[in-house]
Image (cartoon, rainbow, N blue to C red; front, side):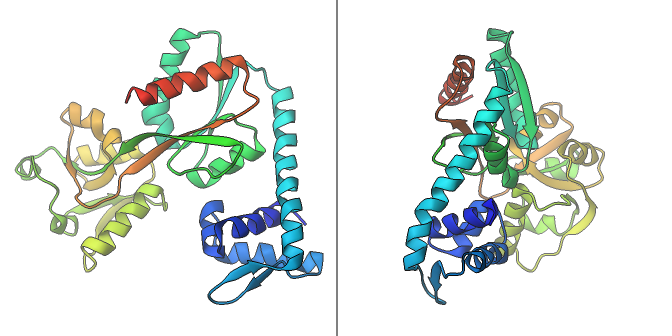
Length: 298
């Protein structure tokens, strides 16, 4: 028995389905199924009675569910206690996605450091799917990500929205489009610089493509994950791309690229996640500072 099996079982019960549990844990549905089957095999009993349309706890499952939740809580608390013992309370430990670190978190940390220069920071760069693990296993007190974290030990605060935009070279062809949303038909005509990974941004762009222009085929000339490199290539005229409006602001302000809304795409949502208990006085200062910045709309 391991904690991944327990997490899959508890998530399936809490969410009411294997697919929802998979979304919560950022695993494939098949992996959640494997974890629960292996757990049932080790315990020698069926925990969940499943059909194609429903799922419910067995009698043994109802008994085991409470113990499973308690084991997961004890595991998290023990890791947190050790991490706190080994870390100065004046250290702010943060897990954050690369995007939020670069375009939001750096400004917030600079502002906080100006007020409290004796504080130190420990940053852990993680993708959205890794954030919950960083909180539970590494004992980070804070996180910034693009998804809600479902954990009773942490509070979640919505702290911003960023829309997707098409960025293009700042040449006459595209200047003629200023003041409009980007014409969808041009996406299949112009050379495209896309991302090589299935990031949150990439997933939303592909969802929009399938819904808005399902027959279109992109002319991909480069696949790169680094946003700064993408902007440099677009500015040099290599192609066009889709990035966050926040990430595009500096190049737009400098006149190096143009940015156009992509009508119908879903915006990025940014979340601030923080530990509800066991924060040092200094960590409480950081929490309250971020909450004040968020409330101020910055």
